[in-house]
Image (cartoon, helix red, strand yellow):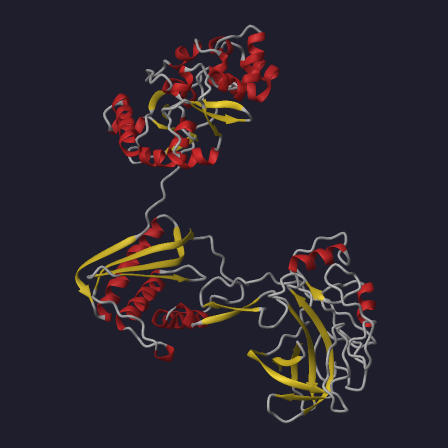
Length: 615
């Protein structure tokens, strides 16, 4: 014998789509209003029903019955947003609420009936609280099971325990909310839920399938699943109020340790740990201070205490920063201290590194750098993160110590090189660079293509030759141009359609990017330079990206000329050509000087610049 489902208390707000339109869009619900979906009425106001409008009517028929009808489009997002305050009001009275749909929510009736003095008292209390908090009319139904409670809520009934099957027996089969099944049952002579519940369960499953079997359970007063209530989030914040304002660092350290132990114990009680910690302080004059600390491991009680102490030390001491900048000291002592665990995860959810990433030396360095941040601010200690980009400066992003090391741009896969004439150009060294008298046909790939055809095009383009080459100056989209133009998306499309046909390109290849190795020093501001050929004439790069003569001498700024022993390039980049105000057309060269120095040069608008220096 099957047991009855648990008692359910369901709150129902009549005509909720109409009320949501009034709450969000200001449509008066006291007027004749209908909500349409797929040109049919899905909800209507009370005055619209008085005009003869019902759910399921077409728009033209509804407007024919009521010419001054207000029509509102159905918006499930609007209904859900407007219903959230109602659910929050219910949760202020009872715990464990499940939202069935916007306009209806349910909870177990056993708990509220016990501490509010019975089921009827609980229903009255919830309806009254929702009306006072949200100014929304609602009805409550209580029955054995959610389905029966929903039907009872439409009539405001509280069914006695065990009376659900009798209540459902006389309901029409349309109450199941399955129009196709209801139509089929009526044609078979089954008109009420009691008739449907009397059929053998095995025959119903064989004839109507799984959905029919679920409807059969509902008709018999049995739920298809238990309640899936949403649990309110646990408040893990710890707060300490101090009668005497804290103005000394030693008193702040004592308060920090006590509060850190309380936070760690509360997290451990729930099997949690935090990776980000928010430290909030309020002074006696009402000034609010806030700082968030991040840690790439689990914060222990000692680690939490250290960070709170460091932060309070930084606030109370007002230490000088770089360049004479002095952080503003609080105007009064701290009377309230609060710790907010921001990044919370299961205590066993962080796997330590295999090769000693969380060793003692790394921990000491992390503590020292974190303390510097607490005194000087998060931006005082930064680390470099490599990412995507064409120039070396674009590939580096400085992030504060402890923050997520996410590149600003997606990085490319390893760049292939296109060897030509037996010289590999993937690494820059004096031996790898062609001599100044040799034609520099050994060009690395610019990233625009990686097929054999692209290699032959790059070799025949005439870059670095003594005479101008007839290379068509075309933009992106032309197969004959080795110019890196357009954004990463355009480059990915070109590679996917030309060299990478038949396979996906997961990351943009950044055409025009200089191949590895990366420069050791990237100059914050490029230094102007001059490049001359063997006859003393300036080396120029034409609009067709042809080098006038092999570079022979380099003069940086006001320095003395230096002989160029080897060079390779150019790597042309034509960026944002579709926006004339932001367009940039550059070509980069790698050169090796006679003294062994290797530089990265760029030419833009006829001006040579030194961008970076290699080891």
